[in-house]
Length: 315
Length: 174
Image (cartoon, rainbow over all chains, first blue to last red; front, top):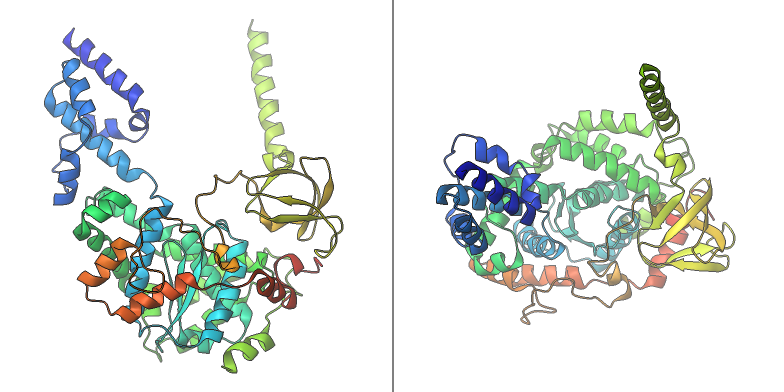
């Protein structure tokens, strides 16, 4: 009878919180108890889980430890939820501050900044997230690098910009970064971190209330962006998606491949974080070449070499 | 009775084969505008008369495709041409951001979080607090501020794309 009552209680709770049923909560419930890996902030968050669950649990005679386990499940489900746009932009803005701080600050050339914004927004306009506000900036570093923070903050170093030969190459590089934003690669990685217990809920309220947690998330993001790099699979996906965006925008889609070939020639000669934060350049070229075979109508698409030289080389 | 079961199984197999032979993309003639202000023009040229302007999520029926363009029927029954990469197969979620409004120079602050007033526009409170705690120089905070405030006039953007044969002017679409 008691077991029957417990089951009815659980059933009712599942009706109230249907997401839990489909989120692997019961895997946890029926698995041997694991040692929690939560941060102090997360523990605090679990403590503050809705008392409604506790109340309902008591009403149906469910043991406290089972209710606690259930509440933990709710926390996991919350961490699984996509990070909202406002939170994404807030995280991106803080990462952007770090980018300027670590890479020599803003490159002081308004014409070049205007140009990369024109090219970047052209590819962003045909992307899968054309309604997001994208911001493009040049970093005053001779190192060759480009990266994207969540929320549409995209950076290219002046060292990389000067290495490019035409606008299609620039579009290819920026489209690769736009693809990281549209596919939310960084956020996905951070969400995985949330599940591992390194961060608690990523809501605006939590970020404001807990600056230490916010700071640890930004630290994790900057470490990924500037030192460790994203998963190789995410880089390959950004190549494929970015080449497609460049093509859809009307650029010759060989731009990114051509730049990577330039970069491959420099491997071993040039010290660059690019090589440590990205997969093998040769492998990327091979994969892009395979993709390019699928485009049958690219012969007449422009590289815009002259326009690139008018803007960049003249500056 | 076994005959009946056999007929049902055969029916299911035939339907599965039909579904496999005619993928959903061939049936799905309805596409959706990926953003606001998507122009549907009377002719293939983007400079021709605009017969309809689609808002984010507006549905169109695709009648045919030619290169980078799609001939579509809009909800009011009119037909025209549209740059096909401005359309999506799935209906986009309702707007949650201000779009590429930086182009028009009038930005809407997408986030609810308030901004501080110390610099040009002001960064979000969380960012300012973070930058202060990490002792990040004011010039780098201002750089982000400028990055966010950077705007391009719609006419300039259009001319840039036209001069480079890009987006709706690309691939002989003009």
